[in-house]
Image 1 (cartoon, rainbow, N blue to C red):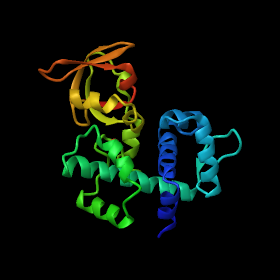
Image 2: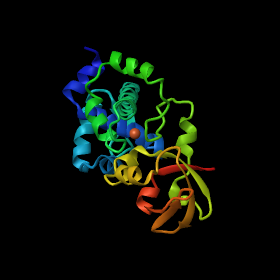
Image 3: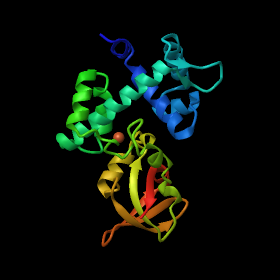
Length: 227
Ligand SMILES: [Fe+2]
């Protein structure tokens, strides 16, 4: 059994903590305890306890009250978990026709259970996907920087034509986000015109389609490019 597999078997929450720290650093530049707690929906005391355990295992580094950093070993495990997560989402959505809006939760359960061999096999069989089905880039993907820099829909202007690129990983964690996007077809590759942009909602319409009022809270986690 590899060291990584041993860690995930004895401390399954490590996968969620390490991948969340990696994503927070990727999106915000640094990870602090309170942001990690909000992202994961746990208390700050739970975060402090888990970080102590991860630090003992040499996976994170944090001076008292400082930002959380992944060590090389922690980053490598975080990236491995994220790749497994994205591949499982693809397997569920593209191969098994599992609902797009439910695949994130299922993949979180399955990501600790598969071997490196199965992950490599999935990667090849699925054609080496560069993003998850929700548009988030695989760590190290060629389009990673472009997707991460994509402006958020909350900043779109009335009259603008937008091409949806990604629902951020943080956004995927908002309970109403993926069901809303699924219902209204707000998915990577979809095109809309911004009918109205206000402080509470962004109103979109597809060609000949109905208007879709996207609440500002959700729009801040949807990346797009002008089309
Ligand atoms: Fe995803």
